[in-house]
Image 1 (cartoon, rainbow, N blue to C red):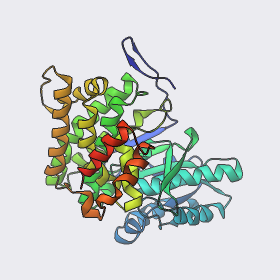
Image 2 (image 1 turned 30 degrees about the vertical axis):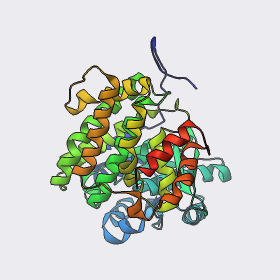
Image 3 (image 1 turned 60 degrees about the vertical axis):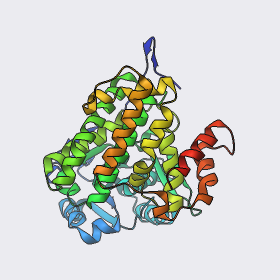
Image 4 (image 1 turned 120 degrees about the vertical axis):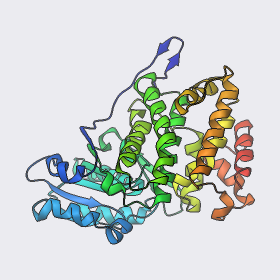
Length: 378
């Protein structure tokens, strides 16, 4: 693991193998076919039932591919990517040895599932699938080389490998405009979670990681409220998509371990209690930032956000970090996303289980702090 340091300013960053990124309205129509790896490519679509049944998007992509390139569609991926559905989708892909490309359409669950299918395909055939992603939320799963899914016991797990990183990302505002507003805005807070936690992640490089995530945070603070007010504004949608990309893509192959405590809490709260990950970020991020403010090194990094959200730094990193936490909490309220874990049926009796999953400990100073934090989410 190569850690970045402030004094001396030193670090290391290794990008994924992302080959192209397109953005803007109608980008799918304009660019999808040119993204296929060959003129004879066969592509399989992975998506969720809502997009397949409630929108014309999947049919549009199938029509673009034509029967020459479209090898099939699996539209049964649910929230948190249950392993049973992943197994079914993997089986459908592996029935046709001519398939060389997988196209994920949707949010984190179909995108992560497509990465996991590529991983499994390599285990069976020795070849990874070429992955084209058309994201419709702001969760930024397309930026990661990790693939999360949920085991039968409800616990989130996953695989990670540089070779399963997405090859092509197409951000199309017309596709994202079909996303329900609560899902859109809450996954925007998930992107905020990525951006803030990467600031104090010990393997985050100053350039480009921290410089990009600061810009991401600024644009998320600016354009999430604007998008709430004008949900069909395609310029706002595109700017938020690029902010989501900036929040996580610069994590890089050099990164080791999890992003941070808010993400660990998100995994502990998400699939075990059926809470969407966008909502888990709304629940945990401000509280985690307040906890992190007590660590001088973390506070110094968090305080850097203030000028990017229109607030001057006061010179006291602890106090400035607390101001960032307040700004995050206020943004969640402004977006109409404020909630408690009790709203999702999580009681006080679950605090030890959640704290244990988030900290991988059953006692100690960090466990005690996290248990106190979780109690405050009730």
